[in-house]
Length: 99
Image (cartoon, rainbow, N blue to C red; front, side, top):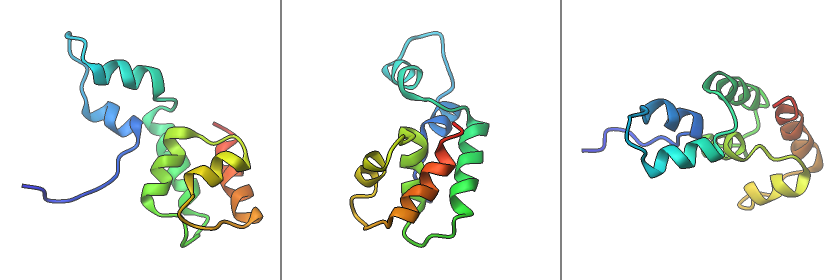
């Protein structure tokens, strides 16, 4: 039974997918694509929440954490479902640039 539905970032998945001695495909995927630690992911999520932008959902924050966009084009690809202004894109990039 599903109690709640919540999008998880790769660092959160890594926390839940405890490493075992057997090598599972998820372990290889997380090692290759998980760029941030759990603490860094939480810090970035908090930083994005403080923007108080109604266009940025929790699912969008997870995508930003997982992909860490480096330029405006990458941000627009992640937010293809909404139209972001240049200022909004710049504020997102300001949050991600320290990671």
